[in-house]
Image (cartoon, each protein chain N blue to C red):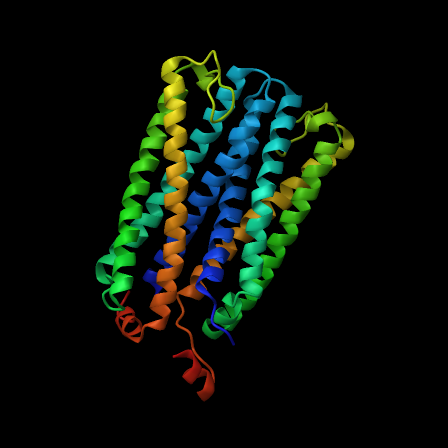
Length: 180
Length: 184
C-alpha cells in the first residue's frame, strides 16, 4: 500500500473544503438572499449564473477530492488507520458526488426553461406561481439534492478528521518495515 | 481515541472548510454574477445581504478553528517532531493571526459598506467594481473589502494546506505519537 503524496493529500483537503464550504455559502446564504430582489426573473438569472460559475470551480475541486482519495494514496493511508471509517467515507463521498451532479443537472434544467436563465422564482429553492411547471419540479428536487450534498459533505469532513485522529496500524511485518 | 482532542480536530477542520469554500464561492461565483441584475442599487442590496448573512457563519467557523488550534498547540509545539515542523507550527500561528485580522477587518468594512444606503442598496457595477454612481466612500469601502477578502482566501487556503502537512508529519513521528497519547 502506498503512502499518500503530500501534494495529493493537500489537493484532497483543499478540494473537499471548497466543495463543502462553497455548497454551504450557496445554500444558506445566496439561495435565501435572492428573495430581496424585486423582480422574480432577475432572481432566477442571478441564481443560475452564480451556481453555474461555482460549478466551474467546484467540478475541479470535486475531482481533486475524489482522485486524491482513490488514486493519490489518501484512501490507502486511511485504511491503515480505520477500515470502517474508510468505508463510510467511500459511501459519503459517492453520495455527495451523486447529489452534486444531480444538483448541477437540475440547476441547468431550471435555467434552460427560460431565456438567459431568467426563470422566475421566489428564492433559490422555492418556485413562485409564475415558475414554469417543469422548472418548479426541478427546484423542488434541488432542495433535496442540495441539502443532501451539504449533509453528506459535512459528514465527510467529520469522518476525514476522525480518520486523521487515528494512528496508522501497519499490518504485517513487511508493512511495518516499509512504513518506517 | 482521545475524545476531547478528536472533537477539537473535527471542529477545527469543519471550521476551516466552511471558511475557505464559502469565501471562494462568494468571490468567484456571487460577486461577478451580480451584474445580471439590472438595478445597480439591487446589486448592492444582494451583495450586502448575502455576505453579511455568510459572515456570521464565517466568523463562527474561523473562531472555532482557532479555538481548537491554539490550546492544543500550547501542549504540542512541533519541537517533538523536528525543526521544520516547529517552523510550520509557527507559520500556522502567523496565518491564523493574519486571517483573524483580515477577516475581522473585512466584516467591519462590509458592515460599513452596507450602512452607506438603506437596506445596503449601494449602487455598484459588480461585487468587485464600483459603478459611476457609487459614492466615493462606498467605492473605497468596496475596494478594501475585496482586497481584504482576497488576502483572507489565500490565508485560509494556506492554513488548510499547512494543517494537512502537519498532520502527515505527526503521523510519521514516533515521538509525537508518544506525547500525543497524553492528550485528553
